[in-house]
Image (tube, rainbow, N blue to C red; front, side, top):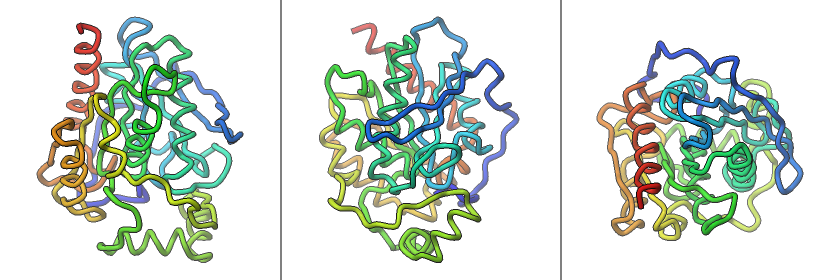
Length: 277
């Protein structure tokens, strides 16, 4: 859900991640090649890393993804990657289902580079993925997240209550829409329906504790109204922070540098708290 500005379109003077970044092709547990990049950041080796999960129709080369990564890289190492069906990654998008395997590959790669603390930050579709990933990969596994941030995430599947979401459902479910996605939006979409239907974001949230969770949402989001973040926060039963951002639209496009910096500060603070305990 990153095909264009939604609400406000945040601007930035932050430069893309530098030539120090390392680019690789990862392979998921179901065999899909996933393009990923690592920026070491300003801190010591082994410090915290933020793994960025972009929105639908994004990829790691998109300017709004590079901008977010650039802000995060001011305080931590950063891993960006392109979900399946996006950018140079292989496969076809399942719009939040098997994308959990892509995030698993990115998190495991981050840990293999020596990062002890991994914070996942997802936008829109990526927000639903980081929630499901945190619920499904808990404990002391290499795929776990140590803290989770969901920005502009849906609470429930099949939502069609806004015009942008009705357009997105046409894009995903109709052959003509998938052609538009492939040619116009550089996103290859899987033609089959989910079977089985994956755990929803709101069903995932109660399974995340005690992992720190931050939910961020704009009060001008044209895709998902405020009942979505409120449902997510309520499902956490006090185990999540909720930031409702005045004037913010949807996902990476609408998250300005100040908000991204605050998210980065929250991520590194969660690492500092964990290491002090």
